[in-house]
Length: 153
Image (tube, rainbow, N blue to C red; front, side):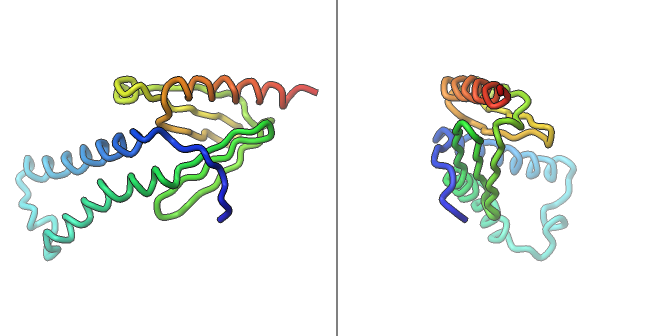
């Protein structure tokens, strides 16, 4: 795959992803404990080492690889987004196809002063998540201006 876009997400993105994955692993562990199913019944003959390795890979390694692979760029003709952990995906969104763009913040993003940019086209929605808030706000304005000019004759 070619080099593609060069701009990255905020370094805090990998920690947000790790926190979310840790929460999911914790909920699963809590659920199995609360409903009284012994982990041995759920896992069967799977050794605890396999579970520990799976947890390590999903909580520590995957967010780091995902953050290193997440890249994006905006130019007057298009928006390019590259992301993935196991399978890399490169998306090119032509400016004339952009219908509208917005920024959002969930509770964690607000606390960490991050935001996500959502780009809508007739084909669906594309995200550039976990950017510093000021960068996300600037990016939303930039894409909005470029999309407006792309439609002009």
